Length: 262
Image (cartoon, rainbow, N blue to C red; front, side):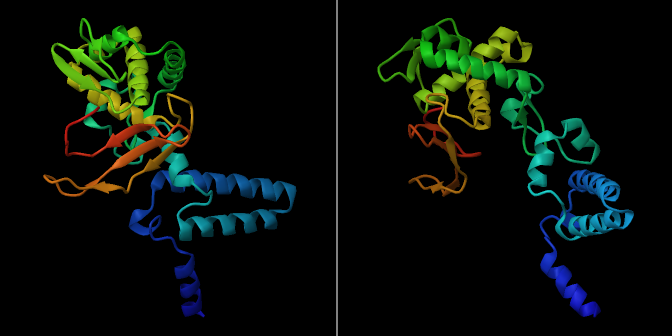
């Protein structure tokens, strides 16, 4: 009998969410939900019904790691970073975004999420630039330089005798909009960044968008594509491409850099 129960438990168990992989914040959240559901069942049905609901719910949490589908993602997304920190979850951001922590993005165990007020202002600025277009002054503000001069193609600019070129019109629009919001807020950390650091930070901020800045289409993300060149090994690449206008918003080669557009 014990062997049969053990076999059933093994079939139900999700090792990626249990044992040493169990997430304490997820477990606490789901136990609270289980207690609430049991209390409702006991009130609406009978105390025995509430006990049955609690037993099944706790069993699901024990064997599967969580009760509510999608809990790992929901917990990381909606629990405040400080709460996650209390459970031993390391809060982190890409190095490029560290100066913007608390202003544009907050550290989380998944790598960060946009600050609500910044995300709203960013979207408003994207919509404005989608209508008005990105001009030389917008790019100068983005890079923190006195002036920038556009060249043919719409995504390349001459700055201090050098050429700056973006991945796409969509990428440039997103970066110019984010930079405009940061400039308006007068953030000291942003103001002290040089052009290269600004470009790197804005490139990483783009990864948090879920709509195409150029046409508002949905983004298709591909984190498994690899590329090979004559001088580098294969790379894991993060791509984000609009499903409507087929414009590439993000092309991240990870730690190694091959040069090219921001």
